[in-house]
Image 1: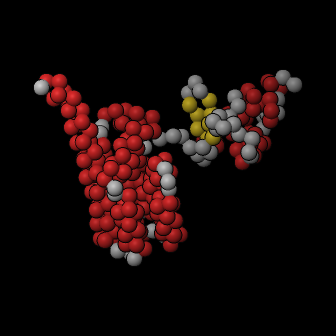
Image 2: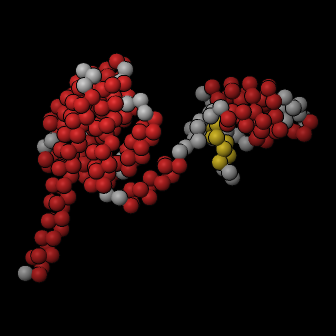
Length: 245
């Protein structure tokens, strides 16, 4: 049957596409077949496919990129496309300054709004951080804990800002520096204890204590980073001093 002669049934196309989205047959990159391919597979016109995709896009089930195709899920936020620019245009101290202004407030709100299940998960994540025996694992669970606290604050705009910061701090080079700072300054045991203090304050519904505990935690990390970056600077200058002498 020629494509032009296929029946136009947008409702049928929508039902079939919903079934496709709910199946496990989607490609790893989430990209759907072309409208022509979908038309041939589902036995409806391309116009019906196009209309059904418009409905699914309005529902947030798919999104379309001009010249690339249609993808499953919601359209990625623009921030994710600028992460590399943000990383190149800032430094660790700037990130820490922002974290110190944002995350204590998030902990404060979490103490007021976190659900019991969220608090239970915080304790579990803190245990995973303490049990981690490699840098990658520590970074993974540490980031998950801080994001859960941010999410538990119940403020979507705050969470969006946090995610921007989190994208930047996930840069591989910065992760290496943070882990080196923790190792040289031997702050891991203190950091684990601070995590517990933060969560205990959230569980006790004590906003001020939660905010202060988060602030102390981030100040310790900031101080460690200052020490390690100062040490790197001194080591970089030593060979030059010897050569001049």
